[in-house]
Amino acid sequence: MKTFLFIAAVCAIVIFPGSKAFNNTTINNRQFHLHNRTFLPPNGTVYVIVDKSDYELSVYDNDGWYATYPVVFGNPSLADKKMEGDRNTPEGKFTIISKRIHDKWYRFMALDYPTPESWEKFKRRKQSGEIPQRASIGGGIGIHGTWPNEDYQIDRYRNWTLGCISMKNSDVDELYRYIPVGTKVIIRK
Image (cartoon, rainbow, N blue to C red):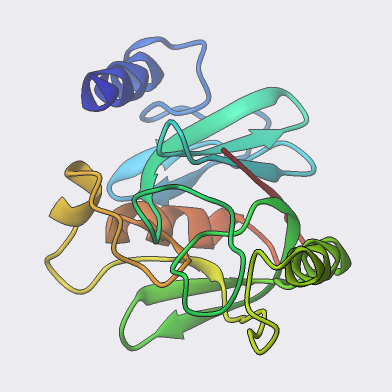
């Protein structure tokens, strides 16, 4: 069902001329090319909402919804990250702090995890005994692609990361081109 909804959303973008993504069109002299398609870049400030329960990463700009991409995560439970090594994807408000080409994951956009909010949750969980006293919070969380030729992991909703958000390589390439460092990212269940 999720694949069908995503395909329907993509078709709506391409078919309806009122949308932001369509071929051979220039509005206000702003356009760029991705994967042999012409796209209008986002208008103004962009932010990202990652919805773990729907396996979606959505981008918004000053005009509202801009694009949605299918994604996968770390642990199939979709639980909030509690500690290093649990393979859970953290929930909360984050910022993209760097972008780089990655040898393994194609493109990598690093998040500022752990944030002060992440540290507070971590400390509370330690105090309550939910996690061991010797546990560490972890780090290195980001948005990235897949191994070469493994985009099928996304199509099958196979959660395989160590807590990151993984996208198809063509999608992460597209996102990487128009999302600047400093973009706000909200991850929720």
